[in-house]
Image (cartoon, rainbow over all chains, first blue to last red; front, side, top):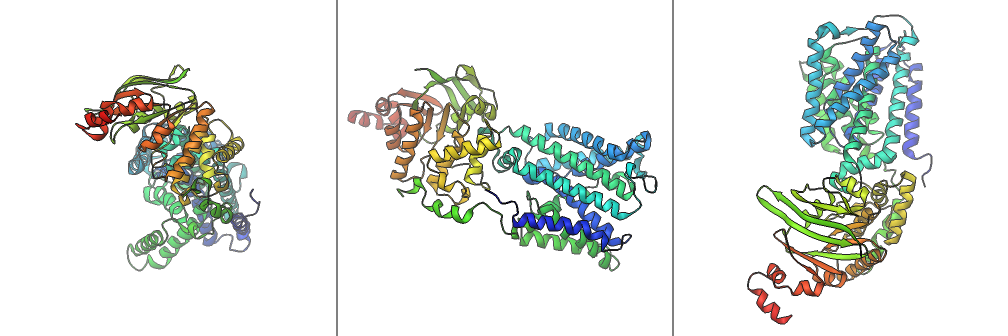
Length: 338
Length: 246
């Protein structure tokens, strides 16, 4: 029914190969590679968010909460117990998954804006807790990961390119997870929930369970991104790791601008938005206070106005056998008498 | 005949309004029962109450002798009862096959669900449009896909909410043929329809409701001649004249 190499898959493959080769062509210690790593990390975060926000259309503005839980769990496990962040990463995923279950029980009955606000409050609560519970979390000062040189077993590298490749691997894994979910039984059910929840229930879909599974997976993957971010930046504090504007909104924004619920959307969105923001900052932040954010905001609004369905909407649809399908659709059996 | 579906004193109250008021009836396997009544009589609310979309204020619903009232719709579907939606509530961003496959996932894995969905589509003559977007479909096609999706859950009881609205007479005949075939295969069908011609031609029995209450039930000709039913449809004073004709 489907060929193995559709244009979309070829484009994706080219992207990953090009991304994997990038460190050989740019200054390994330069700013560009760090920006590229952030593009990939934000693509992975937006893809994780996309599982709930795109497939189920539950617009979460609290994913920074899961991100921060991942960063705090792995970093605290390492600082207090000496556990490798590679293991802490999965511990963080479990903690975030558990938090997603707790958050889901009261919030899934909420729709649209109410759901978004409830998730927003969730991340804010975590930020306040992290700020005030200083004995355990380090408080507003944040946490630093001590420089250890090259210790691959402890997720510590000397070269930026090593982190870069880890992040690229993470993005590949998250994209694969998204693809498997979207094209599997859960994907059918999630799309059904997104498009008509009552009809989905009546058609036998356990809508609560489906949304719960999706948000646990989404939260766990986001937490893993949090650990990787912490290792990559060596430092974070409650206000940055639970940031509404910097993380929660940005994840949603990247997925929305790129194309909600599509595999390529978060990648395109991150490729577009992160460099744009960097460029705006680099060229405009010295000109006038707030100018770079203003320009960034204007471009963002323009992008949404010009193509509300996201950048992926311009990509030729890898749709089913449409050419064949469209003709009989006009002269189907039931319409014969018409 | 054995009753697959039993409704016992089903009531749904919205605030002070009794949308469904103590409705009791049974539905047998291999039977088509029509549910008639003027707009706002409570037909759709009764359907929603039966499948679990609308909690009952009082009463009970039994499917195959087992109480199902209070269960969520997906549980009710798993027990063997589902409904179609008025104005076809298909999943708009999915193809016809995907719509039906989603429902077939209730009893099959993804591979099996696709096979099941294709089979259901073929029986309804929808095979050629399996890959079409549901947004591109005509009204009758949407109605049939809605039925296909419901059938893919493999129900014992199917509630059809105005599947023939907006159809031409000849399209209606096509759909009625499908419904009769389903009945002959042992399915129990409860049908809401406004076209009296279709209702009279199709149904083995009728239930007439108004203001949420069951006015009459019995053979179509009896119910159609019932003075209360005629009054509900045509207003006060019409009953005497119509009764004289009957």
